[in-house]
Length: 193
Image (tube, rainbow, N blue to C red):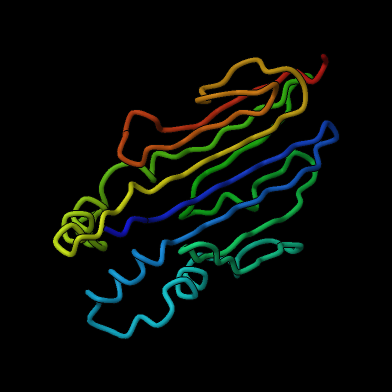
């Protein structure tokens, strides 16, 4: 039995002066790519390359580094870029996840709206994960649920958050795409300490 699916990791590191980095890794299992190719009516080509092309990377700000990734049955890409002045507006697109980072009176706040990631796909879109998993089972392929991990490191002492775990002022979330109750990830820290 083969296993696999989709993995996305995002790490935001913020320094006290408002500079920082965002690193995003998106990986597609080769098992999922092969399954998609088997049921596609058209020539899919390299699904990892197609995923990179459809990701909107061309719209990313200057200074972005994009690298292809391939490891142990996974393929995809890594994106890394710096930011200044606590400004992540370049990451927040009209059709993407709204992400905000701001400072008020020595407090730094992070908020990421994940409501569009939860739940099933629209009827007009591609098949849902549940439909794909059922189809995969027929061919003795087991698809793990998509995994999305978020890590945010803020300067200062942790104040408020809804993270699954913390270590100092580093906040970690593992997002379950089928849990519609979680609509945002948030954290704050006091930089005066």
